[in-house]
Image (cartoon, rainbow, N blue to C red; front, side):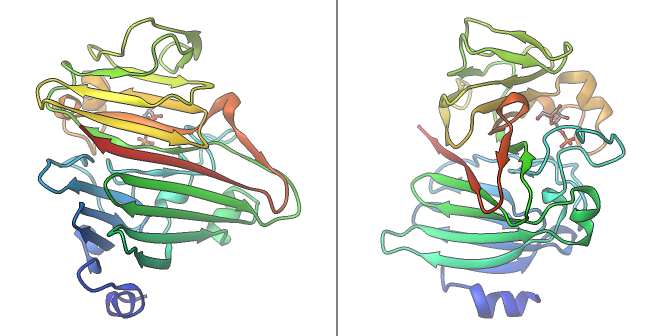
Length: 298
Ligand code: TA6
């Protein structure tokens, strides 16, 4: 669909406008009294969220690539239908295919209370079926209101059950990652991706002084990213999600990543809401699941 057709079909005066962003990727701009957000139709990936009179609450690397099929380093990557390496084939993309596909716009809405919403869809196609032989509908809905609400809903359209691990892989900006604390996961068991997925737990809020890559399991807690330098807290609540992943690459991994600046590990923390490892979701034909993340600041 051309930008003109997108605006003719789904644009909403003063609230939703489509344009070609970096890499000539189609991007929806949502704006209302609560703030602004942008969503790239490649990957249905939120690229920005800025509440009125506040600094951005979503982070994107200055070094990221932009282009259809490429991973954008930042925002809210939609991880589906597998989190991490492919369960059986290392040759296949990490973190699934959804963030690399061009999605369709299903509908756009402007509520009477001022909230603005866009719903995008992805269905199975030759590319997806080549790596994951299942029929599905995947919807991503972004609602810009007093909070930012992001919902990933998927349905099994096939004749056999399938199992998914999913995540809304959100990158949050911080002034200095070594000064923040992530609260809410104290005493929750996690699998340490940096130590053979050993099951551990810590009684204190998470601090960053080394690479952190943890999958908190059976966790439905709200997380609060306390940023003393910025003088604010980013709140991350969720539903339909029993896993929370917390990740910062720190020095060595940041240096190895070509789409991340060596120094950018200072600037962000990932707190991801999803269903990973033993929290995987199995759907019988016609069953569906929704993973939802709600973000706001105080
Ligand atoms: O969610 C944490 C993680 O799995 C890390 O291990 C790191 O690989 C990160 O995701 C980024 O993965 P990506 O495939 O986007 O490079």
